[in-house]
Image (tube, rainbow over all chains, first blue to last red; front, side, top):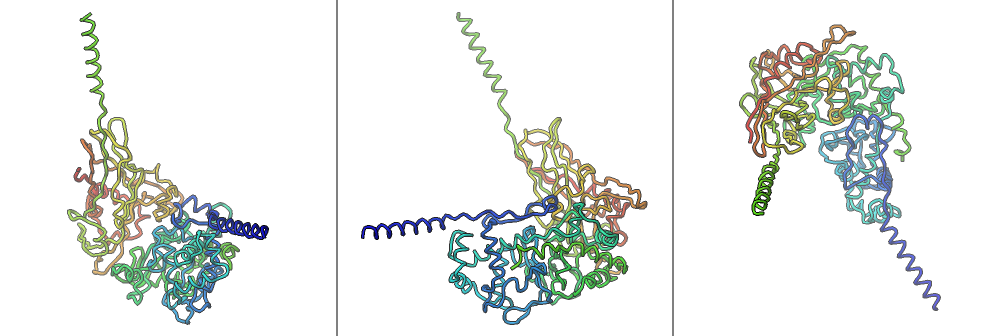
Length: 352
Length: 253
């Protein structure tokens, strides 16, 4: 009998130790793999003090990103529209949600998000911070169409998630705040910075004459003048992360930033996307209206439409654009494709 | 003995007097505030995106974006320099960047206030400033690299009363008439706002009259000079000349 008591006592003692161990589990700091050019050229990326990157948090975020448990009927995950093989977009003009409904915007690719210094996310900048952005698709009736109480309940009753949350955040009480924190941690690790052009800037690759000419057109104020919005050899993000009306329409069915700010001067403005990874991210523009890179270049060359909010950087609007030659257009495309990062889309850390 | 005691007392008194002379003067802080105008009318972010300004040439315009770079902003007295900032980018849309604080307190007195519009050549190092790279303020290497001095964009009513774009972008002037022998001219310029006297904590206001870019000494015709001005050697020199009357001293409080 004495021995039985001793065993029982020891058992509870050990249980107690285990539970304390879990409570005191300290997640391991996750070091972002920042490309050399980013370190040299850019100020530090944004990681909120209340959501530092940890290995456990990133791993949990990745699991959640690919898990259909976030959708109302368990049929879709974030990755359904943000496919890593497509630089985290899909090849559809408009993605369909779990009910088969479509919106009016093209799914944005996801990379280098920690360098969006104004932290305005989505085509119209409606979401401040990555954490807040991740709240919306779960609720949106044309996307994952669920509700956060339901999602939290499913995760709470899951065989693995409570432990994973405990390890990542020190608590197994799952709610939307922790889910979006984990998703944001994973998204901040999606860094694309190893294209041919990056290698060229590092002296590790050579451009063809066509690619070099295309870069010159991109940087020439009298021809492409792309650099004012889309960065340069000194800004490896290849975007300004700002909002512009790039002359797609003379009148607007989608107000873009204007619907968010309520300022008519913002009507028709949408975020400049990065021109990295265009090889994988067709179709293009906020409404996916252009199927090919050629169509995009033709738009800037001769398809501009005037409006009161068209960006002043759009040259020769009344003539439709700057009128690039066929050779310049082909070379510009060749340059744009040097910004394709195959390592990024094939990175095993980012696959399901 | 009495005399000796008296002498000792006097000595201490004199020493005391000297030490009173050595009392450290209380130092003061100085800040610099930039206020924007179109002629005499204050100009803020709320004035953007509306046709409400008329140039000396009679061109109506609206401002949509105005960012400019100032460098080497400092106070100087006989032998010391006190720096507000090595460089700063002022963006009319972001009113949190209009005030600069001197990094250290200074002794009250007279100081000269100087700064430079843009970067002088020695400082205009291609890709060297991470914060400026991040906000796309670079100049393409085909134009000599380095950084813009100013990006001033908007629309004007052209001769047909149609909206037309302008990009009044100031950079170091480059003459590309011989592509194999580019000729550069440093079109940044120093602004000397004279000698100012401070007796207590002070805030200096610098008035920035945007209309002067189109006004003095060259009357700017937007129908002639509107876009693709970066590679225009002569246009850059005209901008530099007009810029010299943009900045003036306002109140000191």
